[in-house]
Length: 452
Image (cartoon, rainbow, N blue to C red; front, top):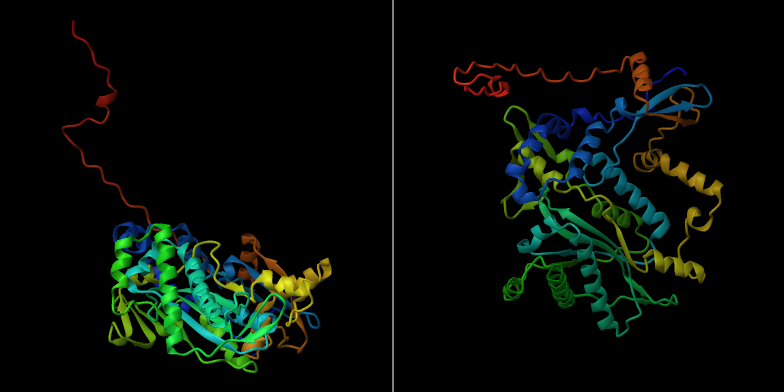
């Protein structure tokens, strides 16, 4: 093993144990699990094993005791270690940030077409939001309702049913205070295409048009919920009679084709984490969690919320998506089937990736290596920090191994004086048995004797 050096200039690895979220979970998570069925099951649904799995991974995220990568300079042999991340979706703020940056770069470099885009948002009334909490399979169906409401409106206006825009839809489940609020964010092209590659600009969309999309969306959501058997016809009739339906559709201003920064910002926004560590604080003295919202909250009449620790844990763990759930869904001209057909016919307006056009083992291997080292690419693009530049000689560093064996990790960390002994288990309870004069423990084992 070569000589170890400090981290490259300007690269300061995060210290997850110092964050308020880690301290909160370290103190209260076991108690939260013990009381969940009694206190939170009625509101947030039955206990989900994925919660324990994701929280466990988060508590090991960034901890070198659970896995490290060796990064070494080719020229001088200097090395440093980087701890593994948990890569959890919808919970770990650091890994969620990385995924949103990864998505933004992928969309900008490999998917977006050189046309204007708009930001769309579809929301549902409070009356039916909890159905999406207890039946999470409804979330991708909500995206489908949003997409269908828009395309049905466009087909009616254009009087053509073979034109479709490109859509990137993301189901979000959280509001400004990390409360449960299912809705759909989307980036939609301002241009529609047919299957032959012909393009047509989307018509101007004003308030009356938005109201028409909103009515279509409400109708499709009611139909979907009735089909799934989660609401009744009486409830639907009651909600249809409301002056304000509770459904809403928002359409933003066009983002011009040349505005790469605007598209990138929105791509990160629609795929962001449910909560921000920068706006969260945990006060151990008063056992309270303070969360500052991004905007003024009309229901709370303030821009912050104070919760007790167990309630806050229940709120943020409810945002963890179910295993295998799609977090980003592509429709229309951005769907995989549509792009594949355009490539086969030679009309794809964007450049396909290496991995899509070349199936050789060499290219697949190089793409795989690029994905493994994407953290370095992201830091270079976002913070302008080259973590693979040697701080000793300025040479090029590279990842030479991934170490996961516990005994090897322990030897390395002890050698570097970085090893921390695990927390000792709690002392066993002292059992005290008080004698009971009315019961002799062994009397049940004595056979009965018949007196003749």
